[in-house]
Amino acid sequence: MIIIPKTEEKNFSIREWVAEQSPDSILINGYDHCILGISPTGSVIYSTDKILRTLVGMEHTWNYDDAIEWFEFNIQGSFTGKQYQPTFVVTSSSYYPCDFSD
Image 1 (cartoon, rainbow, N blue to C red):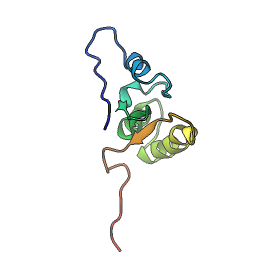
Image 2 (image 1 turned 60 degrees about the vertical axis):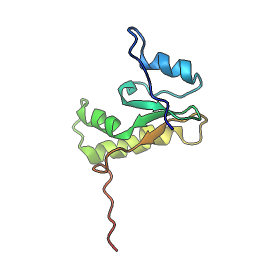
Image 3 (image 1 turned 60 degrees about the horizontal axis):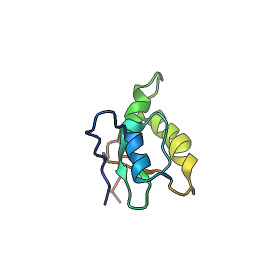
Image 4 (image 1 turned 30 degrees about the horizontal axis):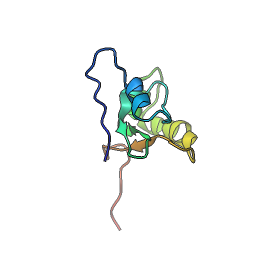
């Protein structure tokens, strides 16, 4: 189950919604547009796809492989073992191709 933000109210940001729902959650600066919701345990759920698109679209000359490497080490890896650490969800298999052949 995911608690989905309802931010239809004017002047109500996603950060305010998260603080209201789960005040101890860890937020990542610059990636509010990548938030999908909050888990029942209080962790903010981020879209890995949106984060990668943001990294590629920034002022870098990165391709998706560069963005994946940077994301895994600098974003995802920096929260390991912390209470209320963000959860990252991949919604498109195009970024992490799987080989199911034997």
